[in-house]
Length: 340
Image 1 (cartoon, helix red, strand yellow):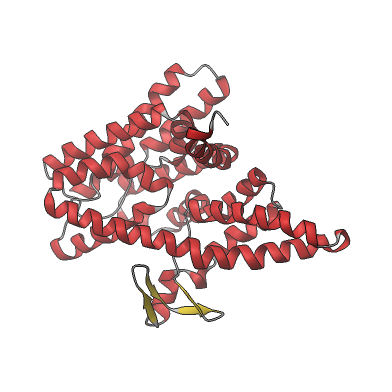
Image 2 (cartoon, helix red, strand yellow; image 1 turned 90 degrees about the horizontal axis):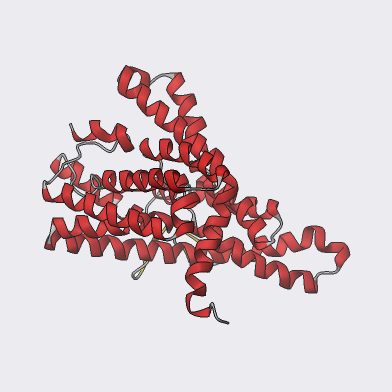
């Protein structure tokens, strides 16, 4: 009862951290491989970018991020005491190619639009299905697995024990996933649209203020998968103007997270965490900050706040001097070429 006032925020952090803690080491390793690949492109040029070596290294480094919902489906299932294979199926469904917005939009025109939510290309039992691009996302799979945990409890009460082995997963999947895709997905889509419009209006008011606000909120947006609201704006800018001034400040948040984690490394007493912090710093330096955010900054709260402040200042400086990004390319230290 005493923890009730701050319980929701702490519980949210506990859930996200609990889901990422088991995969922190492999996540760091994948981030370093992505950074190595970017370094080789930087050294060897565009010819390496088109080589089979680049393709295979990219697949190794990028797979954990591309199929993150499947991996989080497993860890979230353990966190919520759901059948782990069911959790992985939930994540795999979110990654299934034919239900992604990019695939559906490429296949044909939208058949309708829901006010404030967006266009839809197909229906599920007569209900409009507002799709999303769920690969690399975090929040949808965790929310759906949390819902699946409640459905599993109810199903176990009503399904005879001798039939539970396959009927409980059946009811969990047939109920949780449609609700997740028809409700959770559109909610995320709505929030993304709202944020996109809000930042567009703020940018029209003041690019510097926009840079500061985005810098302060960027890591929070990443956690909830809402940072994608800014990517279309950046792509439109590059297409129309030949450059973008919205995304460059991401460099500030990347190095803010890197610096805070490096400082944490110097202060950490736990030898196991200290050992993981080194690859986390390397990964963040190369532009992949997920291990730093989910494994270190967010669980400790205060370092996360400092990294947001640092990101805000870094972005504001870049906004003040009107840094321009001409391509959407490498991350971290390797993003230097994006500004040339």
